[in-house]
Image 1: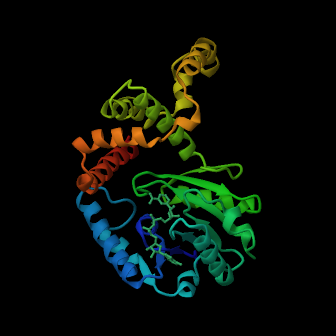
Image 2: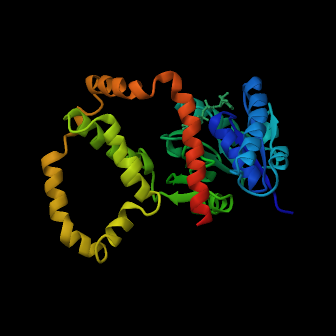
Image 3: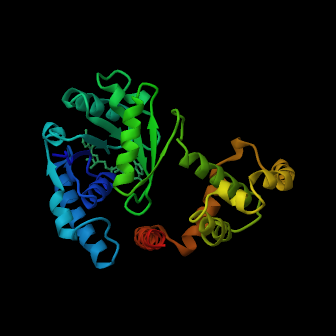
Length: 313
Ligand code: NAD
């Protein structure tokens, strides 16, 4: 029979999201954490969250919230967590020495066909898995927060990762309802953050040069680019906004280059404290730090609605 057990190592924010996603897809996720208090909070937390999503019409996958929650198990033994699993999703804090230690422990317990994937946001598998016996089975599968509603997963194989492992991970992600992309080689920042940084850089420059308020800069995305990019990406936008992308380049590339020559600033001016303080002051006037948590909950609800709209359309 098909092996449905998935091991999730680390039961914080991201581990709990993976557990809920796998449970919804019919798998049996088993959470492990070194902190036993955290482990029980995670089991209780995923049960409550699934039930909340069910009430709000946001529950993913098959079965009721309580059936899905029943599939999620927990253990305080890494060995028990990995035992019988075909896939491991590591979700411990982003720290190189810790990732090395945890991957070393998993390596000694892993079977030869077990996939060992890391949720790491910026560390590449070559930095923490190069010395392992099962290194050909390791790679990064980087989710985006909150993974339950933002389906993108960046699959980043190391040079030593077996191509079949990257392929299987990609199919698994598709099967559980995530949206994988596969990088052809390791690169710092992977892909999403490179685009995000380019965007933040221009926002920063526009604020620093006094062109717009922070509120108006954010509106460019929330009421303009972001809405567009939720439906079609930047490259397809070029394709659609002219008669194909080659035509777009003929018509607009020269202008784009001139704009960039005139307005783009060299990198070292980025993220200076003076500008950060000014933006913080403006943002805090409408969104003080004590209201950030409420706003995160609101954001997740909005993203849930958007995800549902996209899935239903
Ligand atoms: P978190 O702090 O919420 O959870 C980490 C969990 O790991 C904690 O419960 C902790 O007790 C546990 N832990 C610590 N040492 C452990 C060990 N040796 N074995 C097992 N468990 C251990 O962190 P998070 O936000 O869930 O992030 C986990 C990973 O996911 C990181 O690599 C992070 O970069 C990545 N990630 C985070 C986000 C995000 O927005 N939070 C998004 C994408 C990827």
